[in-house]
Image (cartoon, rainbow, N blue to C red; front, side, top):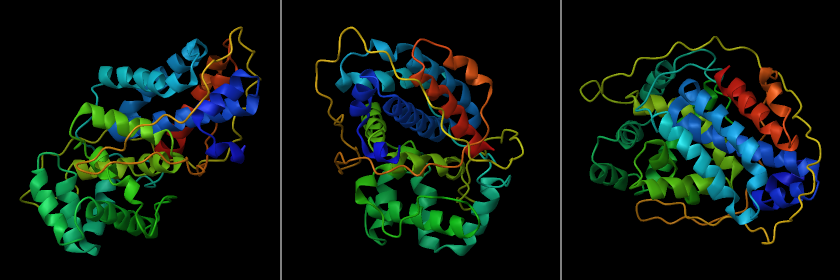
Length: 333
């Protein structure tokens, strides 16, 4: 199924509607990974679990109502947005251990990073991820490090590389940042100018699963940065109480669920599928749609009792519920 990783979700949808079970499975995985990345960044693993499961259920039950593949991204994002709003939209920060941190609090790991990394990068990340800190001052600090938005993105990846050396099993740690990802730190920090920019960036994420993986695996550290992990003592914000996290468990690779071919609908889609186009908004930086890079499939944990959700009319999309819970198991232990 690896060759399907680069196929646009609209094309996967059309192939699934034509009876291709493999395309249905790939589509389910694509949307669940996307939903997970967004909820993990905005709400964290624990707070995001319920809205994620609800969104996946609604996607599963309503997918057959979408007749135009070009409406798929907007329709799916609308479902997730509603669930996120009902859950509070975005938490200000937090300090949550998970399997990637091996049960350690992110703030404890970041405390060591703060001492090891260049002070200018630490200060820039501290201020960039603090939504209360004036953006104009962040931009001024970035000038000495290459300017906005490159400097913040570069500092973020420098931190990820340091964390990987400390045993955090990241998969997305490029030596040279992709400038198309320039809005990424602003999105993680909740600093985008308005809701339309944020929505546009999230829809663009669906076209790039490497970006989704990047955001999902860094989620707990982004939350900890937003919570003041890199702040100097005089700047530290009120700490958001940490939720009790379950002890991490060793994950094992489980094969992706194999859905049955979808029944051919009475009325086939009439519009030719095309990648949904949206900008990657930033302060003065426009993004470009790009073909999705092959997703690096992470280790999956054992399946959960959501198997009941598969017994629905469209078995192929029932895989979505599995994939959502599997992603939680991977990151949250």
